[in-house]
Image (tube, rainbow, N blue to C red; front, side, top):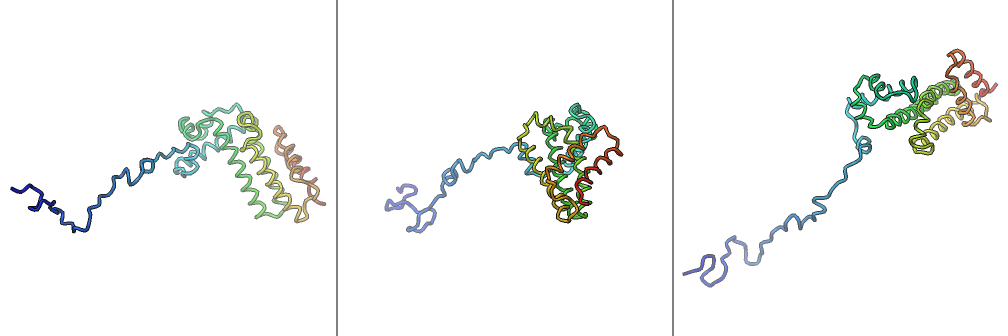
Amino acid sequence: MQTRGLAPSGTMVNKWKVPPDETIRREPPLCKSFPVMEVCRVVPTPAAGQLSAERPMRADAQRNHERLVLAAREVLRESGTESSLEEIARRAGVGIGTLYRRFPTRLSLLEAVYREDVDALEQQTVRLVESQEPWAALEQWVWVLLDYAATKRALFQELVDAVGRDSELLTHSRQAVNDAAGAVLRNAQGAGVARTDVEPSDLLRLVGGCTMMGELDPDQQKRVVSIVLAGIRTA
C-alpha cells in the first residue's frame, strides 16, 4: 500500500508541476514587505488655520467671509471697541453661528480686517503709481491712507493689547505702510513735483496728524489736507 502523496520510491510527488530545478517562492506577508510604520503611518491633522490657508474656500464660504469682514470694518468705524459680534453678524446678513465658524474669536476677525486693509492699501498704491501722473498718484494716495487710518484707529489699540506692538501682524503693517508711502513719494520726487527733502516718515506723520480730525466736517478736512500737500509740492 502506497502512502498518499508519496511516489513508490518514497519521494514527494510534485503536485504543482514545478520543474525540479525551480522553487516555489511565496510573497512575504504585507507586514514584512512594508513596515508597519510605513503602512500605518499617522499623518498629523493640520490646524484649522493651516487647513483654511491651504484649501480654497467654497464660493458660499468666501462670500460669507467677505461680507463679515466688510461689515466688521463698517461697525468698527462707527462704534470702535464697543462694536459687538452680534451686530457685525446682523450687518453681514448671517447668523452668529456662521460668524463663529469663519472666525472662532473676536481677535481672529479683527486680524482679518487689519490684514485685508493692509493688502488693499498695497494694491491701491501699485495701481495709483502705475495709472496716474506722479502728483495725482500722491494726492489720491493721501486720501486712501486717511480712509485706511480711520479703520485702523478703531481697532489698533485692541490689537496691541491682544498681540503686542511688536507682533508679526503689526510689524508687517508698519513696514507695508512705510513702503507704500515711499513708493508714491519717490515717484513724485523723481518727476520733480515733490520736495526731495521730504522723507516717507515725514509724509506719514503729516497725514497721521490729519487722521485726528475726525470731528471736522468734510470741507474743513479737505482744506487741511490741501495745506499739507501744498507744503510737499514743489513750486
